[in-house]
Structures are given as C-alpha cells and as structure tokens.
Length: 318
Image (cartoon, rainbow, N blue to C red; front, side, top):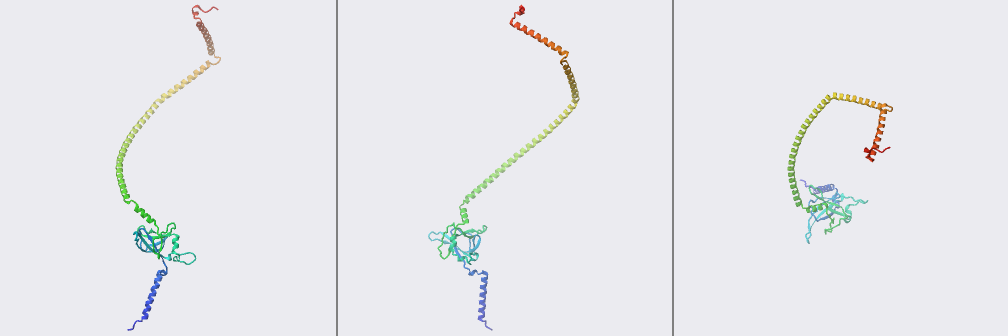
C-alpha cells in the first residue's frame, strides 16, 4: 500500500484555507480590512426597545449599528447610567473635498464640535423597537458622562420620545379613567332619561296628530256644508234675478218715459221764461208791484215804531 504524500496533503489544506479566505473577502466586500469607527453613548433614561443590532441612523440613513448595551452604577450615589456602544461603517459615509478620505480619517472631536448628538427614536410604534438617531444640534449642550479615554463618546440628548414618556407618566391616568367612567355613566343616564322623554313626547305627538286629524275632518264637513249652502244661495239668486228681470225691464222703461216728460217740461219752462215772453213780462210787473208794496209796508212799520199813537190818532197831516 502506497503511503500518502504529506506534501500533497499540506497543499490541499493550504489551498482550502486560501479559498476560504477569498470567499470571506468576497462575501464581506473587504469589510474586514475597513477600519470602523467605534463610539459610546450614555443614556440616563430607560432604553426599553433598544437591542443589540439596532440601526444607527443619521437623518434616516443607516450608518452603523448597536454592538453592545451595558448597565453601570456610580459607587458614590448609586445613580444608574446605560452605555450603548455603536460602530460607524465608513463604507456608508462618503467624504467630499477632492481627496479620497474616509470618515475614520476625520478627527472625531470635529463632529462633536460641529454639534453631533445622539438620541433614541421609535423605530416601530407596533413593536416598540428603538434605534439611535445621530444629527447635528449645535444648540444642545455637550454633556460628557464617561471616563473611558479609549472610546469616543457622543453626547446624548433627550428625545421627543423621552419627553412624551415623561409627560405620559405624569398624567393622572387613574383620575382620568375614573372621570371617563363617571362621564359614561352620566351619558347612559342621560340617554335613558332622553328615551323616556322621547317616548312621552311621541305619545303627545300621536295625541296631537289624532286631534288635528279629527279637527281637519270636522272642517272638511263644515266646508262641504258651507259650499252646499253657497251653491243653494247662488241658485236662489239666479232664480230671483230671472224672475225680477221682466219687472226691472218695465221699471227701466217707465223711468225712461218719466225722463222724457221731465225734459219736455223743462223745455216748456225755458220757453215761458225766455226774454220777451208775455209770462215773463207779467212776472216782472208783479215783482215790481210787490217791491213797491214792500217799501210802503216798511215805511208804515217805521212810522208805528216812532209814533205808536198813530194807530189811534192817525198819522201827521201833510
């Protein structure tokens, strides 16, 4: 039996290792030789929902991930703080300026001076998962907590989620729940009362409708009787007019004849009183005589007034 050649076996082993290394390089895209940027963030509040592997984003762009989460206590006052370790992938960030630079080539302190801050953000409202959001907030003070000189620290700032959680914890939820329960009971009582009042109102409305219906029927009967009476009266008037029509015609004819006689009389009177007519001359003569007699009677009356004895002794001699 021929012995195996150790050199051949060693060659196969070395070739397999080389192939494995090439495969790892191809699969990792050269990531093993990339220098990643490491940093730590100290959060004082709860990080419920944040887990290892959670994304680290800059304005919504994923630039790294959470690599570790720990818990630390201060021995002096037992205050708790939670360091969250992250890595920044240089392949996710491109530096501009004419030179082929990586984000790892820029001093980390420049980002902090620019206002780089970290805060927690809600990744999913359904699952409650959190992620780390990076952005520039130059107005936010840079408060450093850690004492590790070998780790880059990104100052943390309170997020809107933390503020909302604090406000929610300060709400009197028990009192609000009791008030809501009392309000619901009041609403139910009001609904029951309204139902009773609506039922009574509906009954009154039905009674009113029945009374109105009866009144309308009565009015319809009265209107029918009134129309019948008006119709009868109209028939009587028609008959009376028909009966009186001949008499009215005869009366009109008589009136017309009387008017003709009156016209003739007026015409005759005009002839008698016309200027130069004998009757008018006689009338004028009689009127003159009547005037003379009236003058004599007035003189006699004045004489009697002045001398009443003249009725016995007679008037003065001429």
